[in-house]
Length: 330
Image: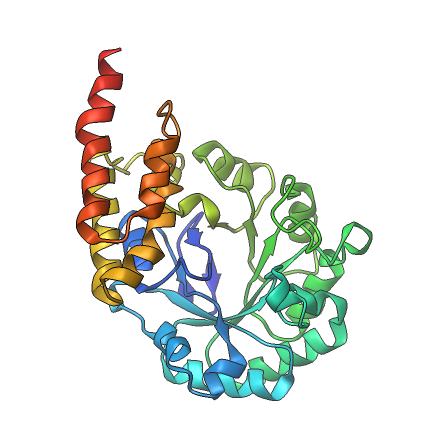
């Protein structure tokens, strides 16, 4: 699969852009576990052109994580064009436009998935951004605003005509948020359109190697994108790639715990101890590594209340060295 001149190989598995999750550290870890491409946290066009420090920091890319896309969002043409030019200067491999974020503070103001209610402006923004930069431009969006406006099949053609080089489709409407199941049949309809020549990347409920295989073999997508299933489990990329390649080595439990410890260290190093712990502790508490442990609630609460580096490391060590060995003896 190619996006412009960027060759991602056969059946690529990509890390989705997620606010407050896909920072530089997390992207690199996912890359090391096999992610074929990474996306930054989404970047506000308005904040970027105002040179807000917290936003400009999101443009930093580690060469080891490439290929990487920087994703931008906004609701007006001129700020989006200006932001795209600023992003291009940061030298990502791709510029991605977010027309899919469903949260109220974004979609409610007309940006992200809010653009699904104003298709003419969505197309104007897309065309203007494509014309303003030399990098490949891609789009990530949803099936439509709600159940009565699933417009993605015709919208995909319109976006292609604007000059985008790939389209990612999350198989839910904005009104669904993240409830229910992703509609991969609808994603397949996009891919089956004979007029569509750009790659189609499917997103939504990719949680196992079997679902990856289904996405490619049953629904015919060119690539898959993994979002929430990677939170607290960046090793999921190794597990997913193992379903389509025999050359992948799966990490053992001790390596997974070391990965979580690395996330803590790098979060603290990147910010500071207090804010770094606040940032990372909820990701760790959500890790599927702990879901099979009975009566884990109090330990999870302790994780979510931890405020120091040593406290959070001690909880992980307790789980790894005391709780898990006891379970294996039962």
